[in-house]
Length: 103
Image (cartoon, rainbow, N blue to C red; front, side, top):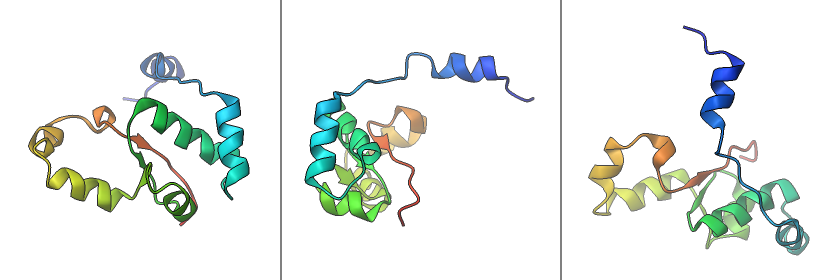
């Protein structure tokens, strides 16, 4: 059954986050990353979660925040929360995902 625009908007409601523009621009200016990518870094840091990404520039520029999917899953595989995490829907994982074309 197709999902309508109203249903999608309803599901996403309350999932928006605002980040401080100054923090974003400061990160962007101090690295080769775009302001768009810096927004994800700032948000992940504010939420206290890893930023899961395949973007090599993000991984190199922010090793304290950006984590590859393989490393993230490997960390969970060794953690006591792994079995619980497998049972939880992915959107409830304590992480922020960045979808990027920067392979």
